[in-house]
Length: 382
Image 1 (cartoon, rainbow, N blue to C red):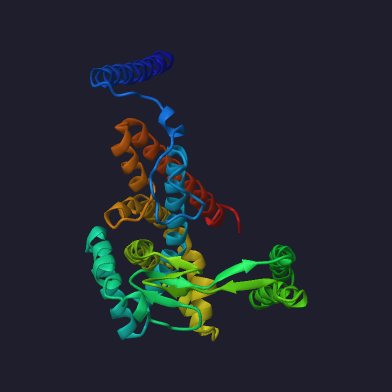
Image 2: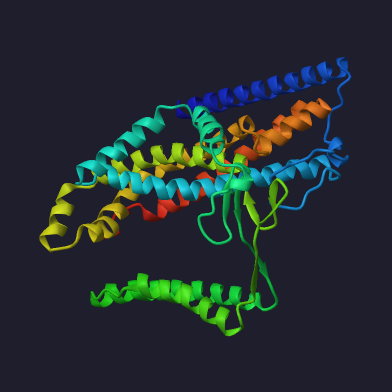
């Protein structure tokens, strides 16, 4: 009876799989027929032709004489750049908001609550329009730039910063930085084992920070600071030289980070409140300060609740970055849309959009799931 039931189950699963494959095959044939009827070429051969497509914000060298394939790659790099910076910035602000939500200070907790309730209930697209059309547009012209400190200029064309020019010998500084990372990691592992063996805590955070920043600084000054700074200079109606954060990029980061941080803040709040209140009372009975309690007792346990929900917010941030097309930032969707308009090959570009977003989000999910599995309590671990 059991074998018959298993065989029936396998047969049904096989039949459903075969049906899905057949439907996919029919869809492929129908698509090919429609493309031929409209004389639309298929394939990725156009990726090797000259794009003639200007892209304003690029991290890598690019000219309109480059190919469509390289132009699309530039869009992917821009998307990854926004996603990585956005995740780090949104996490930092979100943790601060979440901790503030459970603060004993009424004013701080209420301000954090207003932030969360406001940002979560306004569509992200409107937040982007506000940051671009109100905040950025209200900045002065280049000739009347805000000059907060040396070498920096803020105006409606962007934020101009001094650009570091690395000279010969700077590789030794990077080598020292990598070495300091290794030393800090080894020191942290040793301090954990020493604490487990003796019960004595070593301020490894301060020591690690001193090693991490001190060793590269010593090497930097010992070899004569092999870095030259190129500042922005006003020429005509705009600045030239230095580094610049364009208004489109800045507005996109403001909107994405503030919006996503509101959701992460709620994840942090719920995680903190899920920790047993008895642990907080026990720590206070030993005279432990509130800051140490939050860093060493509450947050490590709350992470087990925070991470699964935050993983979803990270992937949402990546997908929401496609709204950059609304304010003119050349991400993957914006560049791909222009390519579609010039070549009429929407299927290929849309397929690449789906593949890239899927790959990025699966990578984020895999890394977060790996981290989550390492911090989860294991049965019998005590």
